[in-house]
Amino acid sequence: MVERDGGGTTTYVDRGGSGVGGVIIGIAVLALVAIVAFFLLSQSRNDAMRTDAVTSAASSVANSASNAAESVGDAANSAADSVSR
Image (cartoon, rainbow, N blue to C red; front, top):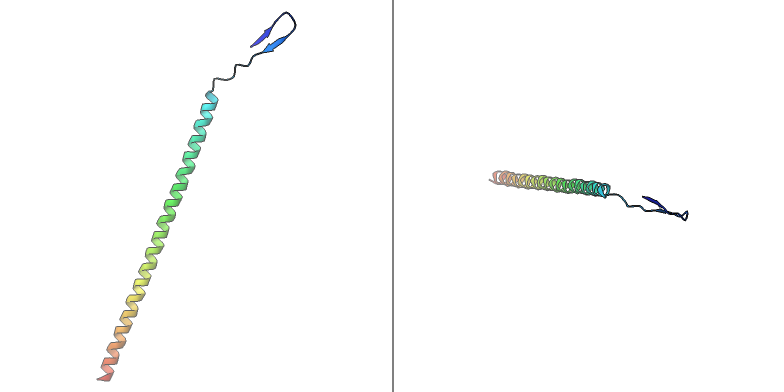
């Protein structure tokens, strides 16, 4: 709005916007934050699942090695018993 009075002075009055642009930017920023949070949580969950899988596999290998060692020990005892008789 521009007002002119008789003294040659010009006054400019800026009424500003309606704020719709600010609301749209706010919603876009909020959506971006939600998307980033989703991906970070998803990555964390995948890392936990991967860690659990590796831990389970290592435990399985350790159990297999223990069972194999026990079987070898039993076989050695059996062989020793049969030789000593």
